[in-house]
Image 1 (cartoon, rainbow, N blue to C red):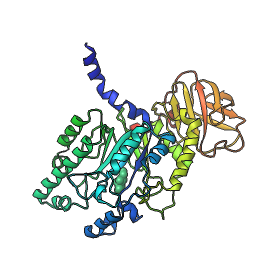
Image 2: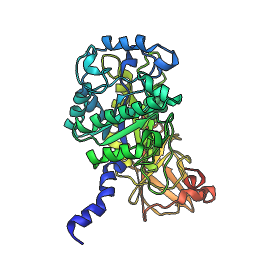
Image 3: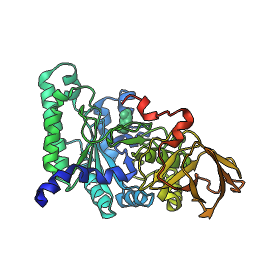
Length: 416
Ligand code: GLC
């Protein structure tokens, strides 16, 4: 076989390699809705007439927009990629579009906000993702097509293909295309297969999500974790408070500990966490979000090996907290910290060493049958985010812990 033939055979895996190792990315919901501060669905939920909503563009000045600060925050938090809402359901395009006049250059800011984002992400080595909502509350053809006006539907699908083509041709290499809100039309109506073939012709390495009524490269469980079977890549997207778009009255933020546990659960299933922030109308990521991401960053500085470079496994994570695996290491995330004596049940491997990853201290242990007793852990959890114990095993851990539940296989029981 020639080198070229070998390379082209290896292509699909190479294309997915970074994504299946990434574990952590930043989702950014930013658009005119930030001005109202009641989430990205505000236009629809409050039935704001299009003519009234359009006026928001005259106030969208992006005065404190600094995508370099976003990118630095993401990179420092251990994230490997970013996905920005190029166009959300409101229909406003963050880029200098020739197809849609309702765009950032025609708004108060008079800048191509997308171009700046793409450059900033690339500069710090993050992969660049673009979210594109197929739905559109601003263009009347979308709803008219849905209601059965086929001429409107055709116009709208043309419009969609033209906008996606702009995104795929004007901003250099794009690593992820993240569609949303396809439901009103079928794949046939969207001409999704043709659309994605054009996208892939422009961006051969790109990864496309499963939200244009086609399967494509990865699954997108939303606000929950669900590992895909058969090695299909997946990414759980989640909010940091209860909203995607800016909503200052919503203070129900996840703690850094919850984020760390989520990361561990995602790593256990070989997936990624795309964690959302909703910048304010000026472009600032809320201080609460920044604070949580800084705490996660500090936690990852010590606990990174328990998340990155781990491999998926089938052990249930609800016994004492999520577990992650790397070679012969089993990382036990002590979501419930029980103090000096901690027992881990169900392990049939021989434990060669136990370390408190959080401090680097060795832990005394004894093993009896399927019980592992850890002795002399600190009274109080040594991490205020999430304490992790690393067990060095004689062989790579199998699905031993599953046997505690009589061989239960959480993945096998769930429908895809
Ligand atoms: C939900 C929200 C939508 C958001 C998306 C992200 O579907 O309705 O606004 O963009 O989640 O996955």
